[in-house]
Length: 420
Ligand code: HAM
View (cartoon, rainbow, N blue to C red):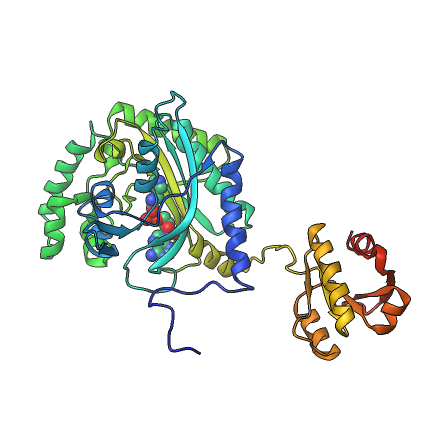
């Protein structure tokens, strides 16, 4: 123990569990790398105004959940609560959209911060892997991203998840729907806060989880019945492409998402083994966001997958990832000269790509062998005075106990042979 603990709503990633997180990030990124997405990294903090305008003044994220700070120089900054606004800001700032080579396809991986009420699956510091395809109004892109997310989850061995799909319309059809919805909602028996929400962001009321509210929403008008012809055709095409790619989905006319920038396609991956924090990833199209943050019109689409919740989903399904061995060979020196020789050998093995470790701190044989077993290595390399005199090193199979003497001078090749 120390005097300090990790802040509330956060946790540390430690070995061996941390290896699972790395593998999950890698599995999420792999399909993107194969699909023309380039890696982007942006700062952990941005101007508060970027998120206020981008994510939306009335969203929970902006009104309640941002970690904001004023710098000594007087700048108002926020730890990033999500990645889309930052990535779009970066792409616009670097004029990536100017070369005529649209869409600009980017992926990212990092930490995000939201001051939420902590519970299982909901943290104040969490990790996402995200992807954004900027500057093309093409349903094939929406389908591509959804397929890539689906394939990432499947490649991890997950099966207990569902894809929820909806369209939120665009600037042609959404305003009309919004009015119709507001009219309906104003007639309901709702608390003051929810009534206020009707005027600012009526779609979010559909997302209210309370039973008393949901009951009244039974006959609410749905966006899908108010889509304009273009939005309808676009959505049908996304659905057809997903079906063709073998990606099952459920139409969810109530899916609105918690960020204001969405237009047309919205989707969420939910896992049924996670309880209330069931969304393991989500995203959608955001055709108006570039303009909202001062750029040109750049229709775009993207998603972010939650690393923390995906790890929980793996646990819930009892999936054990086949992780590469941390250590393949563990060297146990007995004496000073042996330590030097084995350090040399371990260095050579590492340079040859073998995961090798050494017993440090002058441990005795018994303790060193305990460490060797704990390391998960397949082999121990033992070197004592007699071995040195004979110019050999003992390679011990830690599972069977079988021991072979390798010529010290040719030990690297000998170990590699055995590992093969
Ligand atoms: P989001 O739905 O807010 O979307 O977050 C995406 C995923 O991040 C969620 O499905 C969830 O798995 C994870 N997540 C969010 N908040 C937390 C939390 N407090 N604790 C643990 N995990 C969390 C976005 O962030 C959008 N930027 C996605 C996007 C990209 N849309 C278009 N492009």
